[in-house]
Length: 272
Image (cartoon, rainbow, N blue to C red; front, side):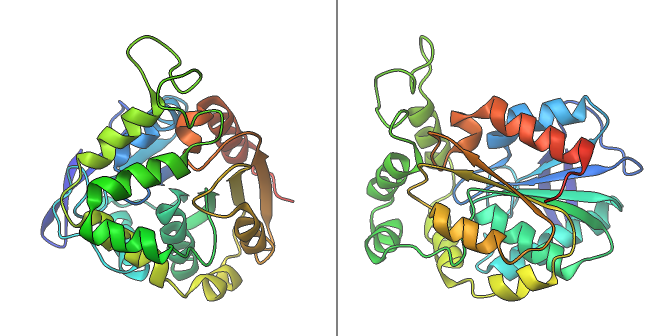
């Protein structure tokens, strides 16, 4: 679905169902150098089970017109502008990695429309090593290889063996690499620099009062599980699920576990 925000064309995948503003809305926010397609399974399921779905392409990503936004706070404001443009009023935000910071910041800024959030592969602070940040600016191909190695668990990290190759002609690691290669030049550095510079996590966490789900990969080498747990400790109404033997790319490595956790969180509203 295409729509206008700030006079620029934006895109959201609606899960195969027309978007209806009157229904509870689930907004998916992708991570750095990604787009809406990382949420295909989860967005399609929820769209066919009672929710309106918006799997967004952030500006400059996928089918949304750029430029890419340079700060997490600016991305959060853009997401809130999307909600206003589409008339969404009862909203769950679900974010992965960079998108988790955007969801956290947006929930802190809008306590009226956002009723719950889910943060996947999150950490605060979300620091990027100097070597990787430099590579995202000067050698994108090398940076993408580094990210893909670190984004997948020990079980999935091989480029040719099962289970990263779950069937003929399909490889989780290479699929993610190709997705990253499709994004516009310069977006990778912009995204990673935004994550590295974000300093509002503690203030945002203190302002969040809605039920919050944390899905943390046990073998996540991109966003430290210990920092994800520390962020969870700052939010009162939270549920924390540790995904065993899963890395940063949780939607690809554990799609059913992620979907089950999100479905239970949305339908039961469980908090701990």
